[in-house]
Image 1 (cartoon, rainbow, N blue to C red):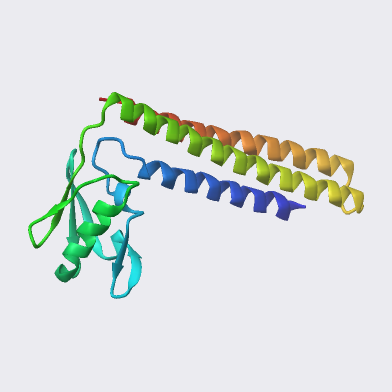
Image 2: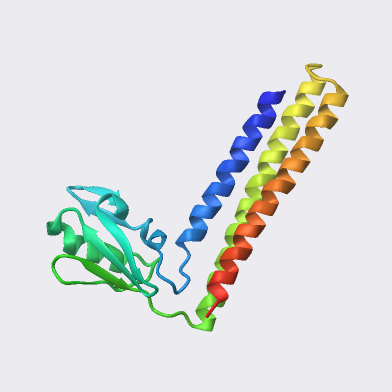
Length: 185
């Protein structure tokens, strides 16, 4: 019985963590190395994430510097950043490092990013509700099989409701913080 709650909590933790990772990738108009974390680069015959082949540094609010570990990969890395439609950036290089300017966002683009933010929040909420649903089904089955009592079932349902509310507050706060950051000109 306790295993079900612990397992549910661990799943909820991973949902919140995944949401926070997704929020980092949304472009805000301010330079953030997390924006380039999802860029795949084909080096040495296999795809790798950009942070595995280069050092990413924020130079200022509008510029990210990418320093490849192997300078011969500079053109491949530039092309990968340019071709990744999800980031929509246009890097330039001087043969040693790549500079990625982050253009200022228009109000229209900010609203579009906020919509994406809300979609990601709803996906996380649905995933959390699914975890609750799975746990409650397990508990109902345990009551039916007489593994736990009705009192235990009610206690677990209360714990799950409290836990879900706590995790929902975490996701709501993360989304509100990110939305405020995006809408700040």
